[in-house]
Image (cartoon, rainbow, N blue to C red):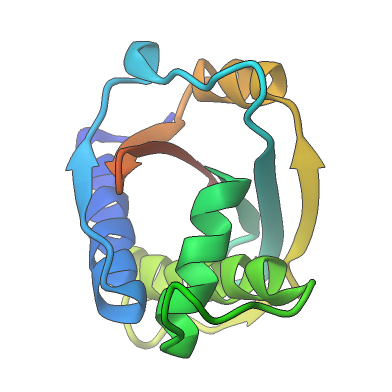
Length: 153
């Protein structure tokens, strides 16, 4: 179970990374306020880490937000098109950055970790909502879209 301090640190890390990497701003969102439309596809990314401590982290965002994330990271305008894998690549990069900063913030600069390659998949809105209701999930609102972050410490 995450302590209140760990949860606050992870929320700040997530908010900071979205803002600094993609110019997207996060707001607090209660897990029971998370809603996705029936036609919304969600992208799930997960990665593990080992070393000082072993664990993992998962993130779920709507596919449409993943596309906007990719455009923002790449500096593309709305009229410019992405490659097929750009949204997945952007979410993996976002998760990798969040994981690294989370570990440093929680365990300090001297703790050594091996970060493993993030994997992505498409999940249904029902699967995303089930994840949001799990213990230790952190939910935020970014660009009017709920996101779910699940650190496994």
